[in-house]
Length: 145
Image 1: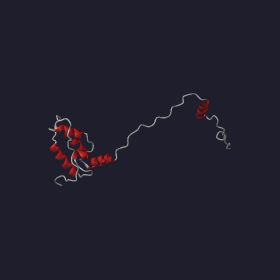
Image 2: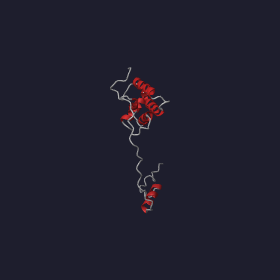
Image 3: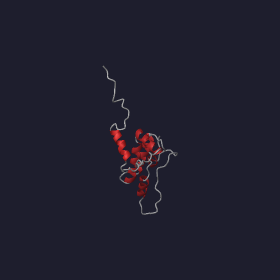
Image 4: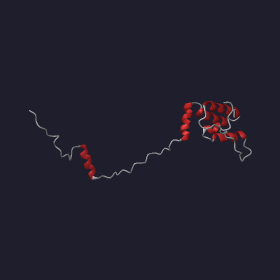
């Protein structure tokens, strides 16, 4: 599994900036930091093996050591942490393929009518007591001797 093959996507390279005063390492780190797909940051295809992920990570760390390019190193390290184990890679793949649905707060309930209505009082009294209960069979039973 030596070198990366040609069919793999290449890691993000810096776009030529309009400002020539910006150093190359800052252009690269800004580009890497803006990418949220860890496969793109590491220059891999989706579904890459753990050995390919590890190999791409160490190759990019050699290109962007933390002493010279800390922002790019942080982006590379974050991408590697999302793909370093099979469990985290599966979780990352799940959210890359299908992002979670947007959360919307529940709709507000309709406005309450706080005005007094006589029929509401009658309903409340019926629920509270047996007013309006015309079935009296429960109150009377045959006497057993």
